[in-house]
Length: 286
Image 1 (cartoon, rainbow, N blue to C red):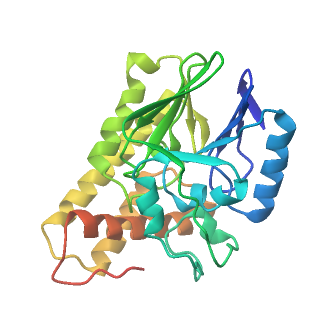
Image 2: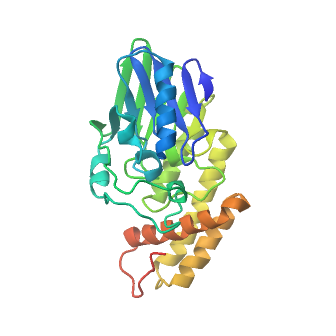
């Protein structure tokens, strides 16, 4: 666990998600959760050692499986965007993936069979503030990677947790995304108001401004690839070719190319189904 500011920590050792913890006087505020049962037990033990505050709050930065699978097992109050409960209700309760399907990290591990999704007890629409003595946490709606995506900002410490808005060294998750909105959101991180801020990605930990710029460039390239497919009948070979182009646009380690190629194929297919509509030729789900 790394302390990035007094009583502000991040954990980068679990697969799929970088976790945050604010060690406040009334109890910890957690940013996302691990998904493997063993990791959840270790994480809970680590949290309990941090302080004796009577309360615990878990914030889900969006609806992605990697960060919401383990929320119920953390056993505390959950907070998220107001669109999060419906997204969770629409999910199956039994999950048995046959190998890699969406390119998410949880699929590389053995998940529990039956899932009881933890719908947030506290929700908001555009902006919310959490206060504890002299501590302040700002929560803001930042759609793009997901319709339920939010950022968590500590203005005094100049730290912002941006979830999947910036994913260095990987293909972005496109399945539930709105690419133009996504680009507009992360361009805000390059404005003067975020100068000297520590930007924490849920996939890469603390990221530099150069990585934010690279994410904008990558998403802009992906948007152009998608635009070329909009006015033509979609075929599986077109999806495959475009997915390979997306993979080449991302600086993906060779050891994770297969997973990220599947992520690109699946994400592109789902994205086009939402934004392009029915096509003369059915797109395979891969």
